[in-house]
Image (cartoon, rainbow over all chains, first blue to last red; front, side, top):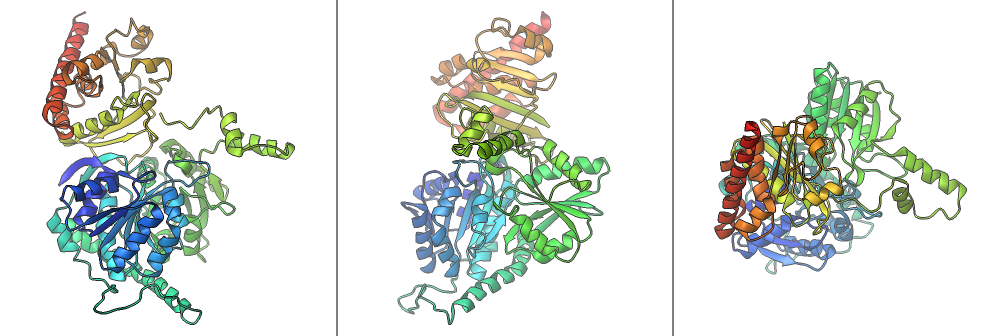
Length: 417
Length: 193
């Protein structure tokens, strides 16, 4: 059914349609409306049987999800930003133990400086945690990916993060097509665990593993993610059969036919990129887009196939590996090893900095001319940066960088309005 | 694509206004995207929310920098921020005030634009009268429907019924209906002047 609703609410409804049996969440910032709405549904008796567990921290949220999943319950939680970091130890445990938990990450920046706005630093910081990570472009895709995520997780017995841009998607009201309970039931069968804590058939989950077997267990996790490279497209194609729309998969191309320049990105910024590319295509530029939906597992082969016909590519990413450059870009470059393709990394939108079409237009024109440095920073205020660098050169006690930069830019305090 | 920016203060239902506008447009079968200026909302602090309306899927995710219309829920903002920043030539301005633009010292602004697309509306008073609360957002939405013709009053009423129920919904519908008539009347007056 078509409806106009908030991204968080849409995801909450979709998660409810997946019949989770345990939802645990720490209900203060940086939490979203998703678990709030789910909490209301459980309390009103609309989502049953389901237990909503209000925990004392994000660490506890993931720990409870581990326990409930090991006991055979379909388990869900959501977090973002600092909350994800606080649960990090348990995040690794969930995947290491092979528990098919689904978690929404409403992507937000990580401090310091304190910042509540969107970028991809949080889930990318858990890149090597063993969780699969799927990135949604729209609220429709966000809700669709949750339905697919439970199947993916439970088939492989590995946890999945569904990543959606904090605020930009979670707080946006837009049109979504909400599936019916019957449709979701037909697509997502009840959870049949591959391992379960059962007094009738005792097993141990989480025993110590020494050097003689640790590598084998870790390798199996890798092997499962490699299996996911085949399973994810299959689930997307079954999803299309059941629900009648394209959602999910590994990668998605847009106007890449005959493109000399291809722009690569993840998440909601793909929409603005597509609008920019449409305008440039109309003006005769040979430019296209490659959206990456599955960040983990990373589809090296599909990325290579999508790029092989172009002359150059730009990875536009909302994340920064300090001391290195791009995070997504590193993976993309790995995918094109040996092809001789020229790649550029553009860091954009950190800490919620808007990524306007005008800035993208300028960036893409420079990329076409190959006039970009290997790593560039979209809309960076160089004057403020250079002033602080100069200050640090001449003054030993140069003071806190964040305060100095805000002062130099004439910013009194973080702008909310 | 038609882009609307709503200015107000925390507690005045600014974000709700943009969301309801998107629901009203959706009820007419159109695509709409509403989103707040992301941040911690605090009572009394300036708040901005946005709404895009189009006949096809809206993919753009940048803030609205060149709006086709601005709705100003709190006239005291005029002294604090440039609520008209980037307003397109020939754009619509709906301002919550009992006073005219001339009285508020904004005669030049009206002269620079199209006079028939400027309107003030005593929306706080309408909220107080019909809902018992000084929340101007719903009357302004109905006023915007009258001024711009972008959405119908009936769609605003559908959005009200989706958001509220019982007495609150009834009060808001009464406030919306009176606001719509007031704006239509002042438009007629201007046309006859």
